[in-house]
Image (cartoon, rainbow, N blue to C red):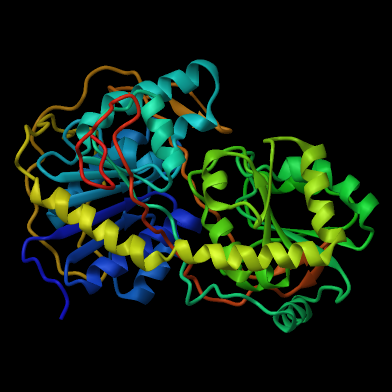
Length: 490
């Protein structure tokens, strides 16, 4: 029988509508709905996330938020407040930076339990004063969340180092081990044939949004050295993003682009090695998916990837080091035995990242937050009058609920910032708080271009796996003897 707490209603909020974050949101919402909870998701109405929610029969509210903050932030916050009033959740779960910004403005989620899940801290995309400003916002807004859920221990420690105080829960990302399974040699041959790839090619695959964060520019700088050592080497950049044109102009021989892939399994199966040259991450799903398929992983030595890729399952190289990256990738493309041995070790290690454990722990955290609603002082400042118009209807798949009044006054002082090209700049009149609206997650979909020639790729389907927990042993850094339960740091 499903769990059915009569008053447990959860609203998930996400601006990213594709990739890892969107997949996480869809799977978490679906799992909680199966538990008998009343669940809905506020998200952009026309993207892959909304479509996936319809497939899963999970209710959704249209929340057409933009990725970066700016003058539109106030209208987005106002609309989110209206959605919250209408759905009347006990817990509001804010995913990634933009939802975390809009949902923690004064009064937006007043009187509700609030969970914030950064999926990668926003300040990592900024530099100088912009980075300091983003950290300041996170420190200031921490009081408006009952807990911060981190997808990896590196992300949690980074938050602590930045001076963010409050309750943290570690809920490690994980992988659907039923969908991502070890792929034998015949599976690799079949995947390559389906994708139109040369059967004798040595294939490196990089899955992710085409952005500076993911580091494909570093990989392309490394690629000529890889080809010099392994002439049969090919590189597939699987994904979409703002840097597509720039990367295509940078690409040389042996590089293909595969945009619009919603399910990366066929590309992972076709690969000999999977490369993640990211500059920063939380704990990326694609690393766990590659390991579960049984592929050697070459990745940047950043906290989220150090946590994901154990010794013997691939190689970790310095961030933004083309020479080091070229050496590690070429070694595995030139030596199939090494790559296969590491792939077998990776598949074995992936068992520690089972998404079912993540879903259970996330439900436990959500129940805990719901149980504490009303115990502390509520932030009563309202957001009424932030923007005109924007009527809010009933969520897709759910009957209309009773709305409540938008009490309180809008924040008065301008101190906002707007993201641009990975940083934050500009001002937000009347916002009262600064923020950085950078989402995270990997975007992919169907089809590939083979240096200009059409070639079908991907296997269809929109579901991508989610997350898994890991206990936090001992006390908080710098606070010896913290007597809190596992997975909770206060």
